[in-house]
Amino acid sequence: MSTEHFTDKELACHCGCGMLPEQSFQDRLEVLRVRYGAPLAVTSGARCPDYNEKVAHTGRTGPHTQGRAVDISISGHEAFRLLSLAVVMGFTGIGISQKGTSRFLHLDDLPEVPGQPRPWVWSY
View 1 (cartoon, rainbow, N blue to C red):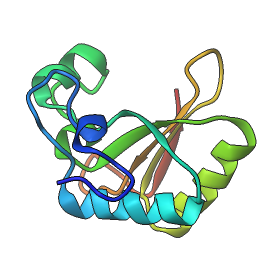
View 2: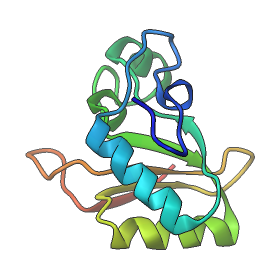
View 3: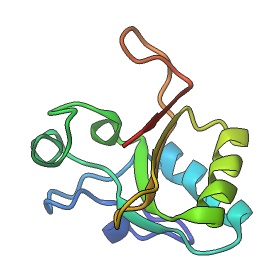
View 4: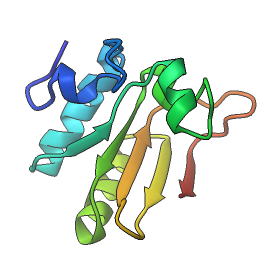
């Protein structure tokens, strides 16, 4: 189910299986978009385990496979502004890639469990 500012197509797994982020995560992302006040370019949403294994170092697991993560293409001042909002809104996992041609923020809202401390920030 899509939201006002995000379509199923942009949030779905890129392999074509149709996996979407959890609706509660989509709703949180929608609130973030409204507070941000401008479009957000999602480059990766949900990922099935098979697709995640092909594209991520987390193999068949990871935030995207749990339907609770997105990567958003953004850089510089706008990345800082979005990052600030994400922290205030309770996103618990933030990955930062701000070098080279692939500049994005990973945002997830996973809870803390053994082996997955939260809140947590990392760089790519």
